Length: 157
Image 1 (cartoon, rainbow, N blue to C red):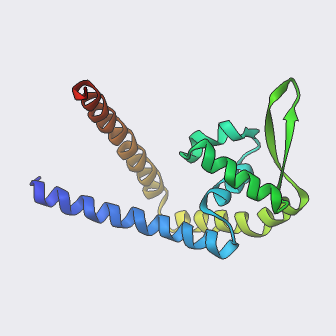
Image 2 (cartoon, rainbow, N blue to C red):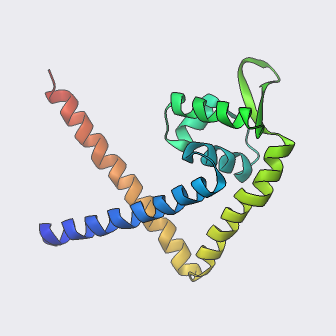
């Protein structure tokens, strides 16, 4: 494939990714949340795993400072509470309050239903292929950028 054609595909892919990110950003604004606050509530809702501030950073791909600011905001709004977990007096675990649970029931679950309904529009084969190709792209991009960063590190004084 020609370089110009690949560049065109990259621009198209970037436009789709930005559009998707924009949809989520629009949702967060509608809900009166920051993007980070939305994704924290989403993660808390998505599974029963216990999250601390530190353990949220990796799945959100955000800095501790950004996550901490969102946690403080969610706590001030009464959506979450922080408690020390049994056997660990160093870090606090995030829990949804009753208000947070109600908010998640009415809003986060609605977003998840919209996401599932969107996936339902794909055939089962398309669903699996969509996930497979997105995972492949992320893994290959991670390898390419790691290689690039390692090369740049070697060349830097």
